[in-house]
Length: 267
Figure (spheres, rainbow, N blue to C red):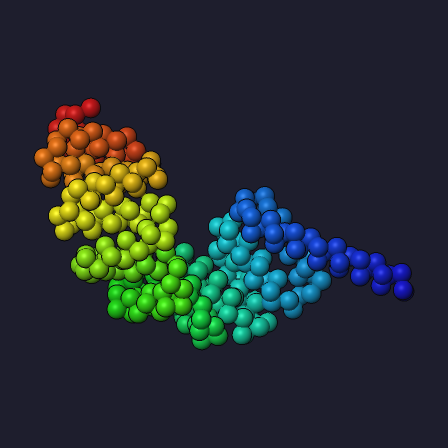
């Protein structure tokens, strides 16, 4: 009996070590094989301790990384059943619901995550994204404001708030937020692109062209950036650059650019 206990202890210690290694590997890489290995390790952990809520949350995160959102939701739900005060389980389930397009359920989960952990800036930011998609811009801005208050160095909150301001027509405020997002994360191609859109809308064509150019430098396959830069050049009176950029957009699969060039007989 003592020998069997010793073997069990060694097995548990071995599993704990493998889980620690799996967690480190998961943090360092999101490759499919490593995520699958993480799932396998947590399967073993759950088999040994079916009431370990954290194991379900972590396995759910691995499922989410593999794009298996329904399995992830099942694991987060089980974690919540085992530990109704696990804010991470609600937060991560909200992320999965958001990706699947169930924004109302995502908001419900973010609400609970925030209730359990009122200082979670990411929960406010992601709830803001869901509110924006549902057209509740004021609540989205309120959430981004709170996210920024909790984490002033978080570029994503400024970027997302800028998107709401842009969508609601407050272009100057949008540009201000994109400026801050870029200051905090100078390699965010989307922030440059969207600032370009806002600059173009207010007539700052030179700045718009500069922003699209930076977005293209960071993401050379961004067809939208080429397309919009083309029209910014056209409005600036540079028709050659207009056509050149539309050709690049068309080459990258932009249907609008393809249709325009075809209508003009341009190859």
